[in-house]
Length: 85
Ligand SMILES: [Zn+2]
Image (cartoon, rainbow, N blue to C red; front, side):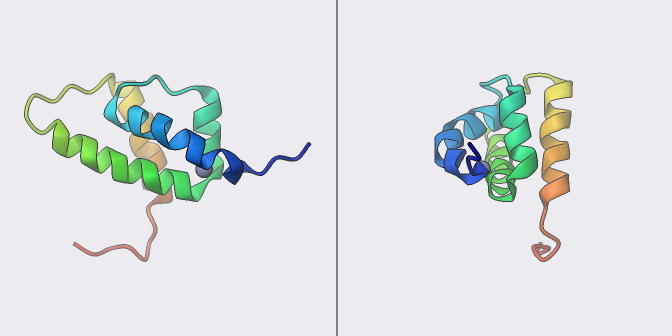
């Protein structure tokens, strides 16, 4: 069976949001999906931005390693056309 990656996207949104907020340990499956799916990486980046705002006071990141992976995923996917601000 050759399931399309995009088929899981809507199911993964909650996981992606939770991951960005530090409420979820990323599964290899999720990280793999993020690696293959630009729309989900874009969503993750948006959630991370929200999480950063949320945590501006009393920052409570889950772990440096996890943040590293999230931010790495973000920098890989940041569209070069979106360089406002
Ligand atoms: Zn996706």
